[in-house]
Image (spheres, rainbow, N blue to C red):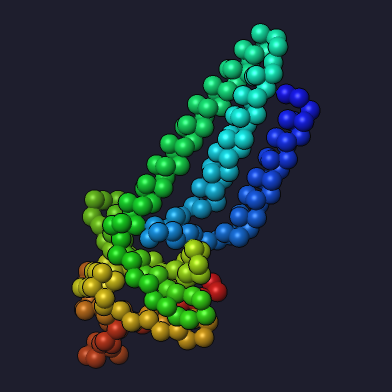
Amino acid sequence: MNKRSGWLTAAAVIAVLAAMAFVFIYLKDCELYIGGVILSNVHTLVGIVFEILVLIIVIPVSVTNLKKAGDEKERRRIKISIIGVSAFLLIMLVFVSWIVAGYAERSRKAAIAEIDIGEGQSILLVENEEQFSSSEDSFFEITLYCREGMRLKKIGRQTEYYYAHNNMVRNGQYKVERVGDTVKVYYDYGELINGLKWKDEYINDPPEYIEKEYRLDK
């Protein structure tokens, strides 16, 4: 590798690392919402993408050095290096595609409702079917996000296991309102099941909705 190529490669790698640091800070404690797909573990995903970018930078530089190499031993070393880097790049591309495909499939199966709450923010209610770790039985759970642009910040969860209406998001059985820096969600639960009982003061006059409050700056 000549001196000029070395400097260019170093500069490109430094630029990628600087961009990665910025993205890591920007996406701290956040998930992404792109094209109806919720991407979790964003830092891991971003790290893989930037690693791919570094490999993409290294390959053409190595090809340029191969063309300039005069010694056969050096040419062989560079060829082996290119093959190894290319194989690793292919593995990383397949891996990141597999991760994104998994998120896309989960988002496709979910019931997702978005409610505008003003100030450039909206609330996403994401209803997924979850499995109990100890059995094959499943239950529905709602995850709540505050959305700003592509960024999602998780602000709460609501299990539907104890309620007759197991698909409150899919069936539109909820209401959302903003109260300052919080949002109130009213879940139309139908009735209690799975052994859950109201306390004595509510047993004869149960509430029409399960009322939950979530902080937007959580």
